[in-house]
Image 1 (cartoon, helix red, strand yellow):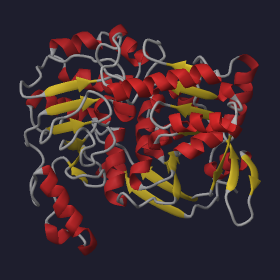
Image 2 (image 1 turned 120 degrees about the vertical axis):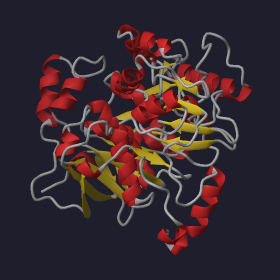
Image 3 (image 1 turned 90 degrees about the vertical axis):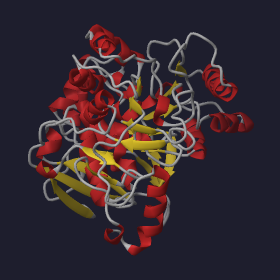
Length: 461
């Protein structure tokens, strides 16, 4: 009896070091401009080539601007990072989706939409939110720069086998509760260290009802509760999403793939190191109030009082509230905001833009709000235009920017100014994450849409 994780892991073991790590074969390696330069330099110093170049795909995303991409990047460091990635791609003969390429976009959006991400795979990237790809029933996790070099040179990586956890989600979601709310609820309940050392399988009736894009949002945030990664057993929803995409199997190979993919589920009676169950009917639209994703609460709730916080966490709790300018016992609903960011590898897909556009249709953006609506890729941007969502958004006072990581992190021009409040659909709300002194409030696309219309934190329902 094996878990889904065990089946995929065991199928990729090359060798095992006694009392040490496992040498794991990697099916798909994704790279961006931030964590790869030193790895390529390491290959040069050792006189090595990329071992299996067809299994590595590069895209520029973190440093790129989301306006005027046809112009040279103005920031010198960002331009150097992106130019270096292009140079490395040419030198080592790798597929590269740079600025101006119709397949360019955020690495964790580009992989799935082009069919690179498939069930049963091992997938790595020098980026913590690689866990996104686990939505397809894959073992996907972030790696460090030295490990990027290891994969480039050998298509393998040394890893200690993590423990396994299954989180079951029973019941039916309330109207307007999104996958982002499920994720923020889970991290709130589990804390940011609650899954440390584990690979999590998300299961249950509520998970099976989610679309692929919603599953990606949930798996994306696995890392924020300390997990090594998260995955969901593939099913017909998965197969329908993958079918027909450019790099998905075709013809007889598709039939063979489906036969294998249907075996990728946890056997009845298989045991996990830890198992937890949540009733999703308890979940409301969620919001964060602090400086880590675990400092969350239902949008209609109140910030905890100091006596509700355990002794070990009180100092960091008080420090966090001071940074955010909030007080214990405050209600978040109704607080004035300055920015709204829709995008990132968490919520930058077409379904997120559909939800946002559907909510703001016929309404007008609040004058006090600066809104950055950033598609996760050029394919998403084209779909927004094909469906006429851009017109709905423009009529409501919004502008669609060009694809990139944007305001998820302060590595490009889209920085939230010091002291300003941003309702953000991204994945992290650390101090300065969106710019020095910026104050980030994490939420789903519907809360972001409602808040953009009213100019304050607003429950969409």
